[in-house]
Amino acid sequence: MMPYAPPTARLLLAALCWAAVCPARSLGDQPPVVQRAADDLPQKGMTAAAVRAKYGAPKRIARQILYRRHLEVWTYDGPTPLQIEFDCPRGEDATVLSVQTRGKPAGPPPGEDPGS
Image 1 (cartoon, helix red, strand yellow):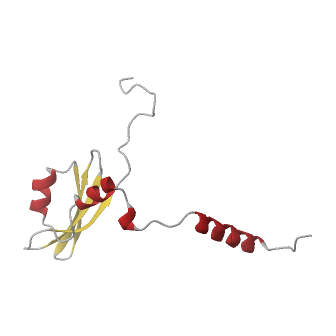
Image 2 (image 1 turned 90 degrees about the vertical axis):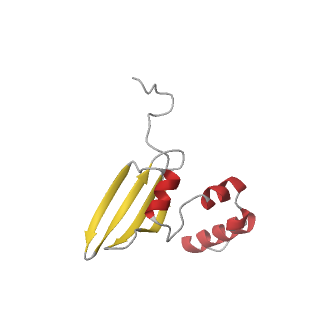
Image 3 (image 1 turned 45 degrees about the vertical axis):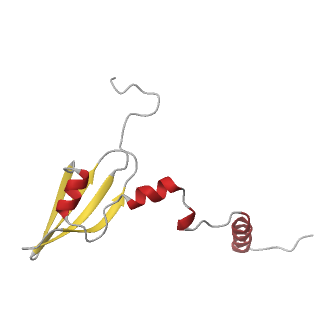
């Protein structure tokens, strides 16, 4: 007869067994396509003019007004939807604070005709 193990101990044992079978992948192990896409994203500190020259005009711009500055979030749709947040201090050039990729753009469910 097997001794009783509390549920947390069983869960821990299962996690350890799974970790031994499925080793973690480092960022360097990603396929070249994923690495290339990450290299193509705007970098922190990049100016708004440089982003606009590279990606064109954003589909939407959201602004938050703060004391002596404002924040802008530019949204791009496409194969890799992006949200780019800019810091815009008064009298200075806007620079990238963060870049986030979003899920695929919303569309009709698979198998449904988009024209109907």
